[in-house]
Length: 222
Image (cartoon, rainbow, N blue to C red; front, side, top):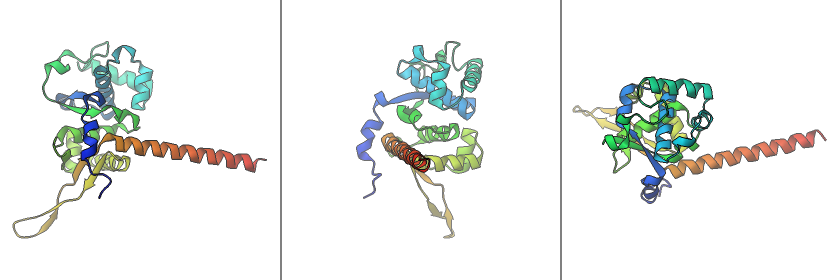
């Protein structure tokens, strides 16, 4: 039995307490990856009532960027009418005024994803089948809909796979003449707790290696 069988984990994954909403229409604005990530974090803050305590430094820490970069793209989001000057979501994007939205797990900001990988992950959640938590877009489709290059989209899928956020299953099909062709990959979004566990294990392993190196240096200098 695969360790990634899904039914047990979906209860936590679907809990509103552990997720936040993003309006589907945000994709129409073709935001840059870091801009999209900052907007998503502001959506997270809104869902968890943290707007009042947000600072440039806090946002920068959670999107793994610099305060200057965050300041630049917050100003861009304001100029596009997506957020107010107080960093609240624009009234047209408030949850009560739109029906079409998708959700992300709140723990996603713990995983140190690059903005490109974050955007691709969000896109897969946007288009996933809500019952099977899977989808099968081509690399060209992912690139076109996220505004990334095909190569960046491919690399981002690799990051998500390595991080434990998704599984990737190749597919194929036969045409009318019986010729076999390679189809689009089937992507299945895994419960976020699997990726969080992997991340913490990697961090712990890194800490252990750092301690071991420090001990080795100390011994060689005696």
